[in-house]
Image: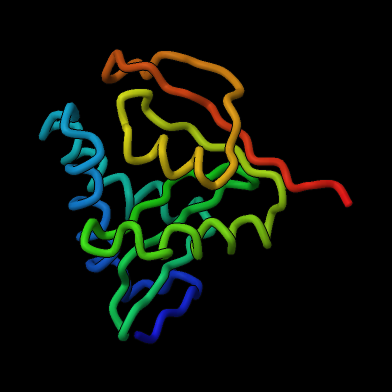
Length: 147
């Protein structure tokens, strides 16, 4: 297995969208098709141009990505076939190396995401309501150890 974390390139878009869709449908079954269709358009038009995005590639195929907005993890998704293999940790390690302290929002009902963030060491910061879905969002924070 040859796995690399590298900066996103424009020709990664179709693989990135495929990872996003499969992981999103698994972790967010409550999202409507209309909402997902809009988000699929927003990724290349709005999110990617405004984020620093890194991909994890295995055997020359993108299997996950992380998008950073400053110290905010705007998105992290791993192909469901590769979840639990360290791909998400590799992406988060890259973000931590670049930014140190991190924050992220996750739906309270997203057990997959919550478990990942908890294992990584994120701590609860606050709660809010995601207006488009009415679902509770948890804001979490990761702080690097002071040495």
